Length: 545
Ligand code: GLN
Image (cartoon, rainbow, N blue to C red; front, side, top):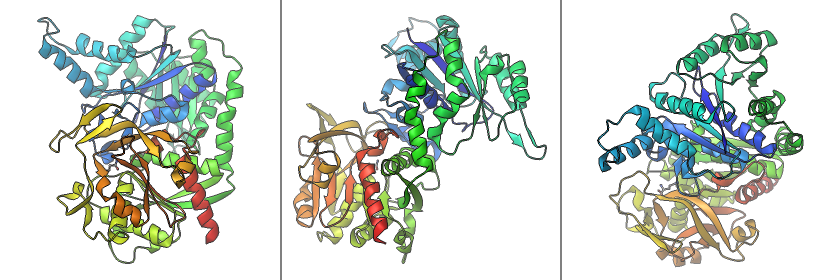
């Protein structure tokens, strides 16, 4: 039976619980165990798909088409285990399941209550869709003390009790702040937070203390005393310069060892061997052989969480090329004015990421034009591909009124809403007045590559690939002939030949647009070939100037 590790957070939000969970997953994997990571989100949205990136950051899409929390991206990047719909649930989804059951009459006349009905539904979720995992790591979103998190905390308390002390473990991640006026690290917030957790019936087995500075032994002993844990299980988690150092840092503090001891397992030697993967990554990041600058022209550029996976995938492309990738985040609206080109002049590559809505789209089109005309490497992802196609249609193919129906009715819908498409042998449908939640083309779809194209070469001459999607609009196949005649090749298509998946420019060193999100599948130990190739093109570009 799988063992459960529950990870809660205290004191403040943004402690990096997701990263901590992912790093522990990686360490257990390095010890030869099979892991699965899950996230429980206490908010009432059914999924984060309808939330603004300003509220929530990136929406991470899984192969099976779930729109999930960005922490699942960390889980995949650190463990390589593909997440599924069953790895992320929100209070909204739990409540809608319970209410649907009530409407069907499944509760046989009973009064439906948070305990046991909601907590049962949460426990069902945590224990469902597992096979032979050794460890299931379950992260609880939010901070202990939040009202909306209470049913989740109660559910894991019950589950801990039901599975027994040696089959479940509670880790509480807290903050030990440094007060510069006193010149001291403070343990009191952690003590209070653990008290709060105890008040909810949970005694943490390990307290993981985030801190800017080294936590002295006495402070750890004090924490152990007040939190009722062994001093070896008060683990310090100091800030690190790269997130890929977190597994190593935790291992050095004995986190994985303490976890295994709790479960009565004997820490083996494998971890030493497997940690090489992380050491190599960190060494490459810390001592690059060169650097490139990529301009990312987007809409949410002041909120890096909105482009979490993209940020990481670019770093991975840098690891593959042994260079540091400096990112110059640019708000696309600045390219709508005159003389904005100078912002792009010093960069070695331009990337326009995914996005929604008309605001800022003109600036993205202008950035694509700059890249095309100046022969600067250009990578357009999803919306970034659509804007590049509109630019090429207008300025290369002479279709002056080319546009996207996303911005309203349009004479030349080079990008348009698609209401029917195939997934394998199944036809999926949507209507223009559908609900906005969960109705996009979501998840993994196959794409056939045209032999002899740059992209086919990037993907090692594979004939078919699979990548993740999240969009409502598509490049309109009816414009293919005109665009190809003007020099924009459709180098990847859906297997039925109806949906353009990839375009590339002929007369250009590196200009590629993809309808999917390759950043979602990139790993530090397995950088995505598109990012490896884009960064390589940027390295070549940097040598030109
Ligand atoms: N807004 C575009 C669409 O829905 C692109 C979406 C995206 O970039 N993820 O098709």
